[in-house]
Structure formats: C-alpha cells, structure tokens
Length: 305
Image (tube, rainbow, N blue to C red; front, side, top):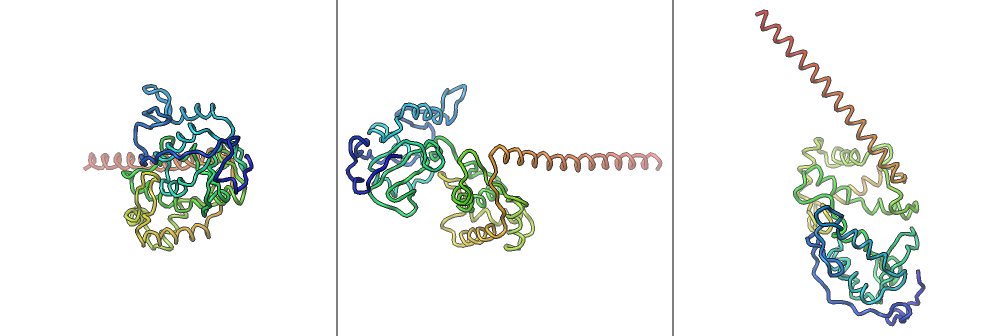
C-alpha cells in the first residue's frame, strides 16, 4: 500500500491520483433492481441465461482494468456512486463519505486480498487506521450479495439470524484479530456444541422458555428486518437490545470457537447434516413399520370378531 503523510491528506499529489472531487450524493437503493453499475443496468447479481452477466461479474471484469494504484476521477465517481446506492450499511458509509480525498485499489496489507482503501481528511473511531477507511466494496454492496433472511422468513430462520448477527463482532475478533484468519480461506466453527444448542441453552437457562417454538415466537417481535442488513434485533426496542446484550455475554462464556479451513468446515457441516438426516429417516422407518404392523394386527382382530 502506498505510503502517505497525514499532512498531505487535503492535497493529494497528481502522482497519487490527485485529490478527487466528490460526486453528488445519491440515494440509497438497497436490494432494488435494476442494479446500476458504471452507468449500465443489470437485472441480476450473478450470471443468468436470460440476462447474461450480472452486476457482480461485471464488477469483476471492471476491476481487471483498474490500476493497482490511486484511482482517477472516473473510477472514484463510479465507486462512490456504487457505495451510495448499495452499500449494506448506508448510515456508516455516509458518516465518512464527505471526507474522502482519494481511493486506492491495491492488495490488502493483512490478508493479501483485492481491496479499496479510502483516504480521509478526518479521523473517525473504528477506522481501519487513522484517516483511512476500508469498507468492503467487493462484498458489501447489496447489488453483489444480499441478506439471506427476508422479512417474510419463518420464525425459526428469522430468529436464528437475529442471534447469529448479534455475535458477529465476537466471530470477527476471533477470526481475524486473535487468530490471523484469512478471508475466503478460514471459517469459525463452534466446537463441542453447536450454535443452535447455545441459543437454546440461553432460552432454557436465562429466558426460562423451554420450548423452541415458544421461544422463537416470543423473540420474533423484538426483531426487525433491515433492507441493508437482514434480520437483527430492533435497535429501537429497549428490551430487545437487553436480550441481545445478555445473549452476547452468554455466548462469550459458553462458546468454544476454533478456526478451520473453509472446505473442512463445509465438509464437517455436511457430514453433520447427513448424520442427522439418517437418524430422522431411521425414526421414520421404524415408526412406519410399527404402524404398518399395528394396523395389520387391528385388521386381523376385526376379522376374528
């Protein structure tokens, strides 16, 4: 990553792309079609037989034409337009947007991935480094990917997502800062007991609700679907926030996490699903056989009568 003195932040040399002029701020569109990227409209995120390349593939091809350097005004305008319209955390994006002075497309200094660094002329809490922001331009916009849980999801899926999202910071800290995990290579796995069991343990021991269905029905009203973020605990619901914070503490105390390679995690999860499915099928087959035998005995009894 190119070095830059902080005193130069308000006057970027031309050799470093020059200080950009910020384009007019656009409205947040969220997950709304058509997706507009570099002045062209796309009907899908990924490739399709009907529409051809989607927005995600188009951006991959565009990035191949970008220099590994500070971007010119043309690319900066289009990247900022992209983030205005589709970045999944619009409130956060608009906090530091007015202070952008340049954008660098380069290799990430920690995980060696393709990334964009936004140079700022003001420092903020939570910046990647002082005067430097690193939002995910490649994976963050909703025109490339979207929340997996929507407003009409079942209570089970919606509530599960609420609790998973509530411990994101713990997962990120464990993966990247405590263990130097690599994006796209490693996954965080719950060891010894599953995340579901931890959630149900919280329901049973803390909330004193012993039925999963009752627990999910109780929790759902404390959640809210955010177009940019999926299902989460409602940020304006005081009791919901209290439950979220209590679960974070419960999870931190009871979860044993481990970092494993993504392929191994997928294989382990797949094997677990297959094992559980086999047990369900075994129960079903045994039940069917018993019912068949019981029905046969009843029919014989009727004939004897």
